[in-house]
Image 1 (cartoon, rainbow, N blue to C red):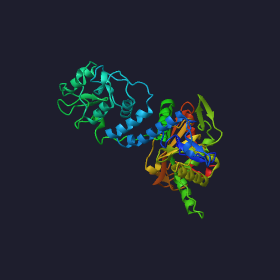
Image 2 (image 1 turned 120 degrees about the horizontal axis):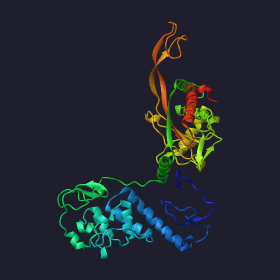
Image 3 (image 1 turned 135 degrees about the horizontal axis):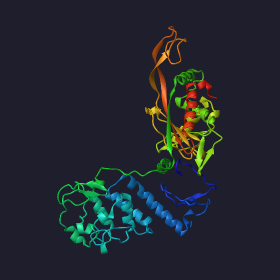
Image 4 (image 1 turned 45 degrees about the horizontal axis):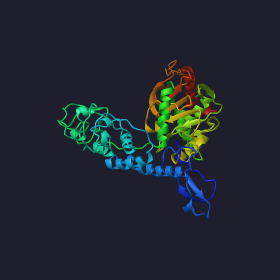
Length: 454
């Protein structure tokens, strides 16, 4: 069963034989509590099982819709659209009346649209006022829409487009329109030549539907939820940002020691970042808070969500109680969570919740970026790539802290150090700029001195 973030197995509570599938594989937006299948006891004649009429109708509709979905997603041709329309006609027979424009037989009118026409109009986002209608009393037919998409429909006269009565035959024999830029579904597209049908491009098809110009891809449940939540975050959360640069020299030296150890335990820079964040969050409760139902909620545990890219989209599995784990423990937890996230095997409690998020694009060479807050959390940290930066280093203990030689005995020389840029996105309803600055100071101190992380 595919949810918004994972594909999960649901075990049947009883033994038996699957007699009937009521919701076809691939069906979308199945209501909670809906019967999806019928089981019978072993030995019972499963072919004679009775299914309520309303459930049978729903099952037939789901099967038709699921069969039509691949054609819409992978093929934008009129033939595929016609198959989709046939499925939509069976599933949406009870839908309400659609809107049209124009009053004559040569253009779509205010008459209700058939389910097949409504399905095509919705899928391909057509403007019915630009389609010549040939049905009785100016009704728009499915054939009119298909001819419009294929570029073989008659053009609309200026009178018809303005809503004046006209017949389909008159629309076919209309005089050529002037060679001026015309509006095609909100875009300004010049006609290919004087007398070319309005709303069509040089290849005889609507410019929007030129062959090979696009491929429709259906969003998965995960992509839909990601889009909805990110839009909600940017629209409702007052984002503010604070940036810091941290030296990774000590962390990289400790990382090399881990790799050279007898047990061969490897840790990554991301593990140091998670541990430093957890250490700083323990000392900055306000950054470890959230915003729920108009109130600030202070979290008692430090649960760090780590963004993981999968084929279906971004998911944020949670490292629970990260402040209580060592570097090796964090490394094992992240590896296991990331592996199961890419296999769609995470449980709900493993990616829902969390008190703070980290998004690391350093492995892709991104120097710095701004991350979007994951509500109801108040903060997310964006981590960039490690890079070498020149600086002035003192080689004598007598040298001053700023790198300048002192007393004539110290020597200052040019050296390089490894640094990383991190940016904290924070919700200003919860975290002030001063709180964000203090958190970054604590994070930087912990990352630059890994031995101090408790």
